[in-house]
Length: 125
Length: 226
Image (cartoon, rainbow over all chains, first blue to last red):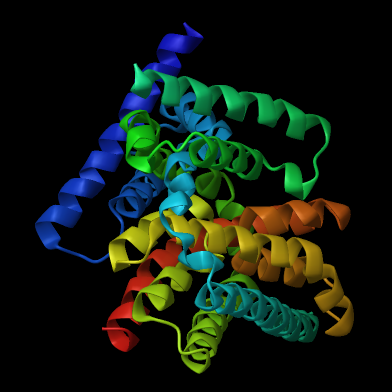
């Protein structure tokens, strides 16, 4: 029963994905079809058009194996030896620095807003 | 026959490495990393072309789209958390998105990187499945994007705690939101050492920034890289 339910729910999630594909093809918008599907599904759940029970097992299955699905694309690096060139090393360096800058700026900003919010709440009381 | 072998070996290796990771949760034992390294080694040693592997690999890859849709489920479950901290989370996500995109763009300009490399680097802070789909949409080199996403993740997991100390980032929300939006799941897994609230805010920030990034990255590419 569990297995059949999971398979049917994977089907429902796949339908949402193809709805996304359809919308991207019709409108020509510049975002991935899977994200359009994700937003449609979120809205369906939020506005109670779809019960969360109808996708829970399928979603749990997909999320448990999510990493597996992007392995084939990842090992496409074998066709891209340019990452080991000087330009590739600069690319890696840029990503490392940018990530550190992002963590520092975002963390500082968030802490600052949090204090402001707390101060406003204290003022109200 | 080759196709079947590619599928079975990928899934088999992944399941074994997943068990290993469940036992020792070290970042360098992440199943994506160990499975990919093993497969890349096999392809290189036995001189198997990537296209041959993909005869089977494509079937696994086809599941990625529907699997990304499934990310709506945790985002739906976390909806209350968003409304609770809406100002700090939403504004921080925007700060993270802009600082991530602008800094990597400027650095690559300084390093005189190629146009293709710039597009490839833009989605680096998003969670891998979404980063790959964004990279494909904007014309980046998808496998390289996946690798850069891993590097962004490891940077956060290994150096994030040092940044927190130096910059005095000392609340659960600020740690969670900065790690989730800069270093996705790999970075967030490091937050387990701080507390449960850090992790739940972190995974929420990861999901939301990925959705936000799917809109902003293509826009950024259109404005500055076309």
